[in-house]
Structure formats: C-alpha cells, structure tokens
Length: 334
Image (tube, rainbow, N blue to C red):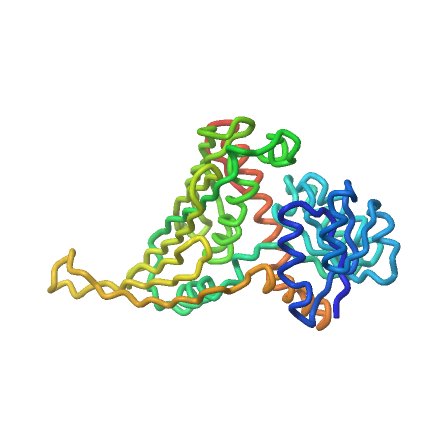
C-alpha cells in the first residue's frame, strides 16, 4: 500500500482523502501537513492521520512514500522540486503550475529523481470520457468537425477574501484555474496539441476576481472549438463533439451520461429525429480512480496515464489563455 501525505487540507484536500481512506488497498493517507493544524485536527483524528505543520518534516519521514499536493498553484513548482529531491512520489492538484517555465523545472526534477509525477485531472478517468475517447480514436464518429465544452459551478459569489482562489494572481483568466484547466486537459487528451487561443474573461458576479471565461481554440490539426467556464452559476457539464457520423455528448455535472445521436438518413429530411444511444454510469468516483492510478503507477514502476508532455502543454495553453484575456488578442502556442 502506498503511504501518502496530504499537503494542504482545505475543501479539496479533504475530498481527496475521503475518496480513498479505508476504501482501497492501493493507497492510504498517513500524514497531513496543514498551515493551521487546529483547523485540521478533528478531520485528521477521524481518519487516523498524523498531523504536522512543516513540509520539511513530511519530506524527511521515511514512512511517507508520496506527497499529494492540494496547495495553491503558485506553490506547486517549488514543492514538487523539494519532494523529488527527497525521493517522494508526487501527486499534484491542477493547475500543475501557473507558468510553463516553472512546469519544465518541476518535471525535470521529478524525472531526474526517478519518481512518479501525477497531476489531478480526475475527469479523464470517468467511463463516459473513456467511451468518448474510444469513439473518436477508432473513427466511429467520423471526421471531427468541432466541439463545444461547457463546465460551470457555484461558489464564486461567497468566496472569502482569505481564500487563495480570491487572489487574481493565483486565478488568472476568470474560471480557468478551478474549472477551465479541466477543459484544457480534456481538449488535449481528445484532440491533441493546441496552436492558438483567444479568450474573453469577465467579472459577472464574484466580488473579488473574474469569474467567467469564454475561449476559442485552434488546434495544430486545423480543428477548432469553443468552451465556456464559470464558477458563479449552477453546476453543469456538457461536452459535445460533432463528427461526420453524428454528435457525441458527455453530460451532467458528474459526467454520468454519455449520449450519441447518429446522422439520420438524408431521405428522412435534415430535421428528422434520431433515436440517441445513451449509456449511464452513475456513482463513479473519479477522485478515487485518479489516486488509485497514481498508486498503481508507483507500484508497477510505470508512468502515470497523463504524460509529462501533456501536462506541460496544458500549462503552456493555460498561460496563453491568461495572456489572451489580459491583452485582448489571440495568442499562439509554440
């Protein structure tokens, strides 16, 4: 069993812990590093986790095999390099880093140390995404003509000033840091490298930071698509991929529904309804799936399913989107 330390025990850190603690034989959290131990004490006691307030103590502990970083993204680069130097395997919440240069240095440190480096793009692991990916790659959708991606959540209107998400430097380009980064990773996974982005980020409701993001994307393959992200409205998720043979969708906030509507017979008229194929996978825990994949990668001494090249390109795209929002012009990714 992989013995892991959770570093940062906010809302998301707690979600990571509860997704696996006592539920799998692959990974268990044994230590927590929190800036304010008093706030974490009850949770750690409930889950039989030792509590410290010093990252150096975690890295020096021979009984810790891996660190799971649920800390602000600006801290990730240095924390990854420190963990790699200590020989710890590393799981990092998204965004991996805020700049490509920081990402390159962190990835290089992990590769030199020979440790597994994983980034928490949990939505890749859902069966609905696996189904969509398979149909794109084996040609069942036909030639892909474009896509629309929507991902929204609440919470921005009630964000506290002391939260790191309330800092515009930590959360550039509206909803990109918490939500849009998932979309970027999904696009890279499904459609490959991105060549150019154009972004409009606005502040509609949240009092402290921009909260809504619209992005137009062009891929190196020539494919184009659009996405929308916001954290000041109801939870929603919809990915629609348009192919010559029909449209495939992943739906619902939990991604539980996969839907495929085939192209109808032209003789029936272009508005003739097509009976969709629907596959529903309720209750799948994507956080547990990503952490188990991390533990298996460590155990079997193999790379994590999301490659370092994809992670780095995602940061390059993230940085380009932030620049496009700030400068009001399309930005190319080289």
